[in-house]
Image 1: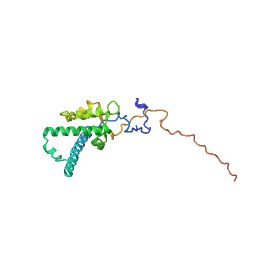
Image 2: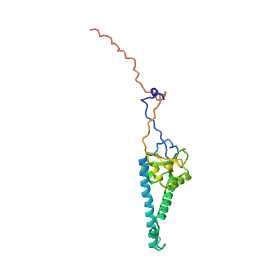
Image 3: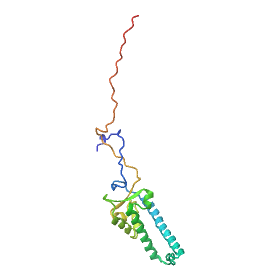
Image 4: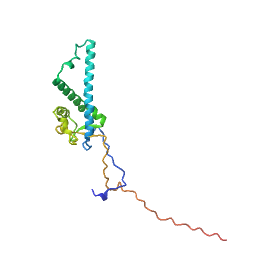
Length: 198
């Protein structure tokens, strides 16, 4: 677009996009800072789920419905703990991102998972993202200033920032948005009054 064709007096244009519509492929990607904050919030949420499960098991033991079910967490080893944490993390992400494209961390930071092709996010892609998070050293794929990790690249998804500042778009000159220039009118001539006879 030729810079001379841009109308500086035109009102700003904004694209109103409903979040429910999957036409967010032009939205900017979430930065690494928000992605790291998402990770921290979601880790706290997963450990919160373990806490809730523990309270439920203790309550069931006290009511006599189960027998020492809460002590199962005391008896598991390191590998069992890693496996249980991985399964709980996979269920957490699969349920939240599969239902609405956003985990608890993404709700708080205003980000969302979308497909890079603009298609609706399928449950298979969400499950693939969750499984890819179990790959060793996957968290280090964000190092070097990358805004996406392996679980994004391998599944054809990305995380967008719904609260990013809109990028201003130049508005070309057209008949509908030409500036209203002041057009001087012809000067009004003074009307001479007849002289009163003295």
